[in-house]
Image 1 (cartoon, rainbow, N blue to C red):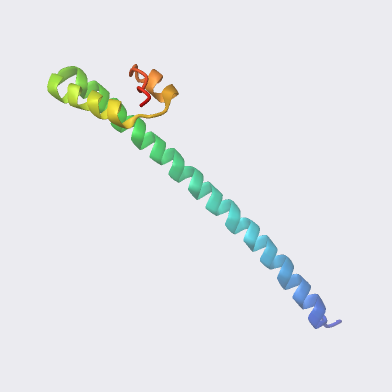
Image 2: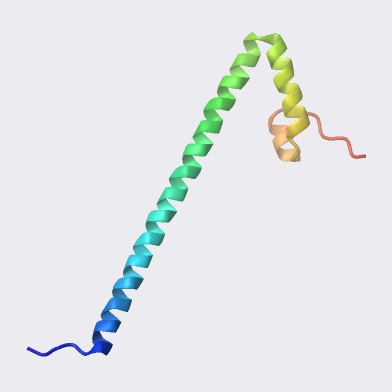
Length: 89
């Protein structure tokens, strides 16, 4: 039985370290993707509830539309929400 040299053991450890780093990166990536998907789903659900509630509560709906009008800046987003374009100063 031959003993491994320190250089061989170091190479094995470095290879194992790289493999663990790759696994760690993959797991972190999956977690970030899940967090983004969960956040998007929360926003979709909350937005759907808010839009639906605005149909039944006229005062709240007017307030919500005003909030959207004040906060949504991107032209494509404003168009999607049927908001008028922003006036340039």
